[in-house]
Image (cartoon, rainbow, N blue to C red):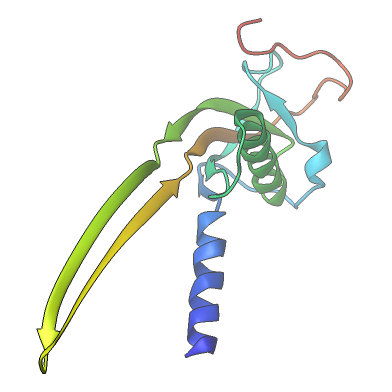
Length: 153
């Protein structure tokens, strides 16, 4: 029983952190994620599309900046696995978790004795951040320390 529960929790944890891709081009040999550049506008020199990427933040990641950093890192890691040296960032969205409070009460009798009970349950589900991007290969990328256009800039 404990082994089954542990396996189920591990599978749930791994599924919650999953990043997926759909190949749209030819993957290359994997590279170091540190070599993957994130573009907010298409690179001027052009690029080759490799895959569409989707990911989400961890279920227990708190703070908007932490969630954003986490999904961008996950997109970079997935792109690197496909040999892409860039991710054309497509945007993020939030899933709305929820907060719930429930109250219950009950009572009854058995064999001449009576009983009653009550309870309160609270559920807090943090929001997750979802992100999309396109894994790309840029033939002649700018140096990693060169400025890149940022959202709104």
